[in-house]
Length: 607
Image 1 (cartoon, rainbow, N blue to C red):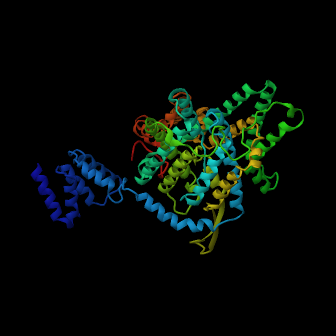
Image 2 (image 1 turned 135 degrees about the vertical axis):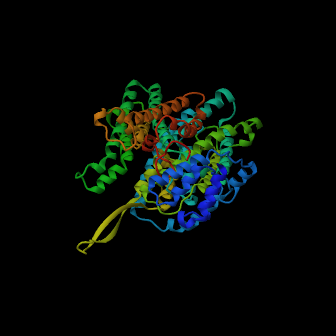
């Protein structure tokens, strides 16, 4: 049979004018190692005019029978050479060289653009950045033994923001102290006090220094290509939902501490103040939909400054009338630019005094911080440059990770909490810079020959560095004594309300929320599903899995294992790609899940 097959192949190649087969067919046959009659049939099908079905069938046949051959063993040395060869995934400095080239192309033009919208965006981002930062400062001040307070958070946010606005490749990304890191730092402090019995700031300084060089390694070996390539919105949505839950939880914690420190009458007003701050901010944020009420510029102003208006109003109300006699708990601030802790006089940590064994053990929290910061910053950068924002200038990730590692280590040495990419502030920054571009499209009617002109509108974003630079500079200005005094007038109840507002803003854009509403909707009222999706039960099961996973990770943040929760978030990536494809159908997964850095729906596996 083998000889007959070989003869037939030779005959086919010799009469290529009849069957359309020649050297190309012979090479194709030899490449796949096909020596059966089915191989000959597959080649014969290729010779005819094929329909799409026939082409698909031929390809499946070739793949099926070629896969039966013993796999070729590739030597380990050859595999390593492949990864480190030019263009390979682990080729050192490959993405860094590309990023440095891109930043040269855009840097000058980033400073030549400035207009009213850019300034308005800077003011808007300033409020959405510093106000949540102040809330974390209040929480950190209590949970880190006064080591980190308002001045440290404001200093870190402003300093890192200015550095990134000047030197990053993607200035649209906004930096600040995040909720997940606040939870991580609070638990590390608790371990330092109750179990490790070492100095918190020294241990944190070494952890952040280790995180710095780990960021360098991730950038040098192109981590963006071989990590974010496999991240889907399954993990990103869970991480976003976790942020929302942390915001809500911190609001409750703030009110609990308030209840323990003030009278019952003052506590009741604190609840009213927190809920009032939240509801007014949510109400004003919808001002753009109030048309025809007010002029559109008034509606835009109310919407953009919703949180700031609500906070200023509820800072003033407790100082009016009989409410002024209540014992209020306000934000603790300093009157001078000095560390929050009375034991410190300068922003510098004597990190070399930490025992040698703890210098090496601090690599563990350093690795956890690296995982958290890398994932958080990459997701922030990706979301603020999505296609819907119309970004055009070349971007990059590796250089920004190097810069993030540098600022992280610097913050550790200064004894301040490190800043990284913020959600939802980064996409809010891009959204605030959107403007409409009108393009005339001329077409000719084939029947009448008349020319028609259509106006096509699309939205683009002003890509520049002024708005991130101005908002970070304004934040640094609040380190001055007069403006610190203004911050000290803020009741903690207002901060609790702001936590609720930030949690709601993050939750409102999360698709898990909308799919959860579908779980509560009668089947007869549900919208039609795309072709190939068998039913809503698969979608509901997927949504329930995300909610349960978020609950598990959040539960871990309440235990002594809290510092490891970023590892659990990253572990969701292989779980999604390796396990969930066996439970849900491909079309269902394509409907509910998307690649974070690639176009199209995410199917079953790692492809």
